[in-house]
Amino acid sequence: MQLVCAQSNPFPSSPNINLQLGPFYARSTVGFGTSVTYTDNVDLKEHHPKSDTLVDFGPTIAMDVGLNQGAGPTVRLPGGEEFSVRLNLNVGTTYSVRSGLVQTYGAPISANATIPLYIHYLGWTVALSDNFNSTRRTLDTTFGFGTRDIPVYDNDATLSAYQSFGRITLTLAAVRSDQIVQDHQFGDQQYTRYSFSMTPSYAINETLSAFWANSYNITKVNTSNGQNSQSWSSSVGVNGLITRQISGSVSVGYTHNTTEGTNGAPASVNDGINNAINLNYANPLRPETSYSLSFFHNLDVPTGLVGSSVTEAYGANFVISHQLSPLLTLAPRVSWIHQNSLQSVAPAETVDIITVGLGFTRQFSSHLSASLQYNYQTRNSNINGQSYEENRVSISANYTF
Image (cartoon, rainbow, N blue to C red; front, side, top):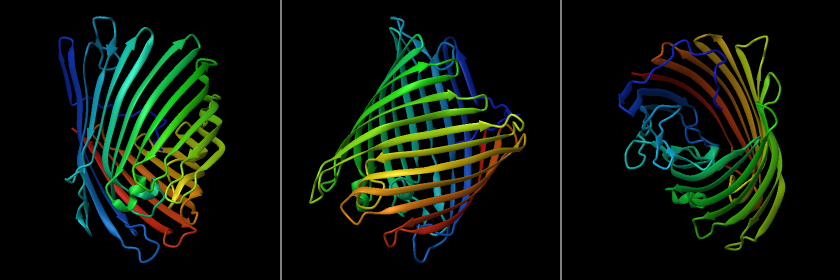
């Protein structure tokens, strides 16, 4: 969860490059980031944990290129249509004191690129975007396995459109998501998902809207023993400024999931309630302090647990952001996630993950910021070898030129 300080940044930043040639302009910000992290259980093992120190460093680049002026890079076509293009690129290198350079994408680099295209035509705003990410990450946070440092490739291609009809706004979207895991041990986590959604919303007032979100999903697991599935969900809720001090969203709905049978695993049908509450509270008597509280309950496909094709999950997150000074922010947080298998080809796993953290962020100037983070995480599973505890301390710094 990303926190925004209650007060404005006393060091407003400006682009490193601000080029204007007639209607053409280019803006970019270039920086450098580094961090040092110590963990007492680098492999997230239940028995005989090993410690390690990880050093991350690399440049940060953000660029906007376009024609004309306005809120973003915009080009107006002869027919009156408009489109804009934005490119963000982050690269980094991780060095392990125990293992040396961590190789990713054939080199010690992780890349995240997003290229959206916006088109405005006949009252509709159409957005076409593609996001590719190559990284190494801890599977525990995504799949429920206690395994760290697995190379994963993600790609999301999205086509969406929306139009307003007075107080009513209609949003349509189609998304293809691909997840590729190079380690064959986790081949059942390699999948392609197609998602189609339609969400009408109604503006109750200037700050609060009611919505009805509907989606249909097709998930194809790219292994011979994977269980493909189809699901639909529908939920209603409100979003925006709920009271003077409370903002966020509240929704409740229903999910229906059908999983195919394969390799001895039976087909299954699972139905259940899905709901989500995300609230942010700003104390009017102490504007330097804000609170974020969220709850969720859903049925997740593909798997979140060992040997599972459908997982039920619920949990809560609580974060406080307190500005000790205009330049120093304190952010304690705690989270809890409970997962249990609804359909499993192995002994059904049930797990509870609890995370407690404390962070300090310091803005030294418009160019330099730093943070100190401590995290404790425990995973309790009913399957032997899938539980662990970890203490993690990280110091990071970011500089923009």
